[in-house]
Image 1 (spheres, rainbow, N blue to C red):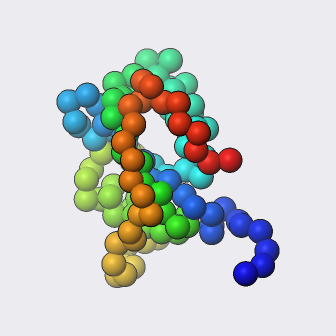
Image 2: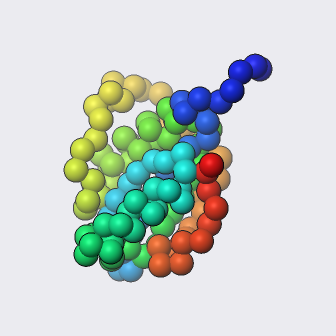
Image 3: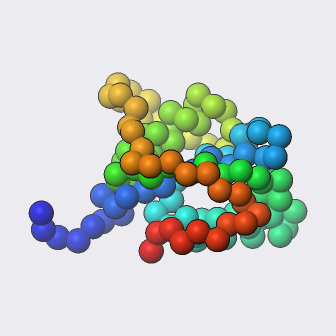
Length: 117
């Protein structure tokens, strides 16, 4: 294998953000979770939906394509409260659901993990 990793073939995180009562608020993907959580926190500081965030479930996928397909299917199936758009580019794919390399649980109020680069 040669060459550098591109955004498409780098390991990618899929995350689900829940409120403290267990309602699913948001599903997203990111190469760098710290950066993405900081973007969500900016909304929290402005009184947006992230202020109600509690548990965060994180799944690591082999590449961005796998994570994006898993995200597409999860959004359509689980109907999170604050996702407003979902790409239809994956609607005709009939392959089995991608399997995460690992799954972890965190708390939005105590986000201190070091993910991504």
